[in-house]
Image: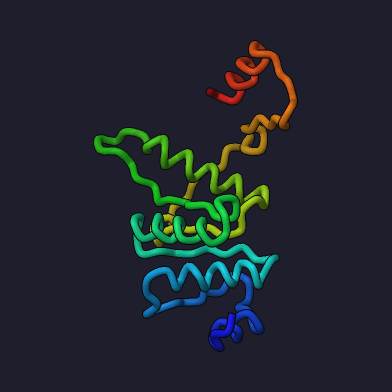
Amino acid sequence: MGAPALRALLDAPPEPGSLVRMEGATGSLPSTVVAALHQGLPGRILVVVAEGPDPARRVEADLCSLLGEDAVRLFPQGESLPYGEDEDPRISGLRVEAIEALLSGSARVFVTTPRGLQERIELPDRLGRLRLDLAAGEEIGFGLLVEELETLGY
């Protein structure tokens, strides 16, 4: 972290809720700066706003390579299907996973788009109960596993 601008940013980090704009940086440099901020500001949640869905996926891939997949979540913008159908279930699933990671504190870097930031979504009241935790070596009967998964909506 020898870059003076990055050192200055780490020494005097922006206030929570403020915006830091990175313009003119190309390639993986913006992701590298975000990774350095993630490591240098351990108590902060960072939100990276990419220009669109494809750049957001590229930034997420860069950050996963630099920080590990557990540290980063993509919060994709909603993409409704034509003719008034419900949203693509893959998009909905990624959005719920990102929210769960935010609420549980398991990830601290979130990548989205301007549209993704603007969209309101309903949080399920039972979000914390929509997960079945199993520890390595723990045994659960097949019937009970099926019952638990059905209760969760699978």
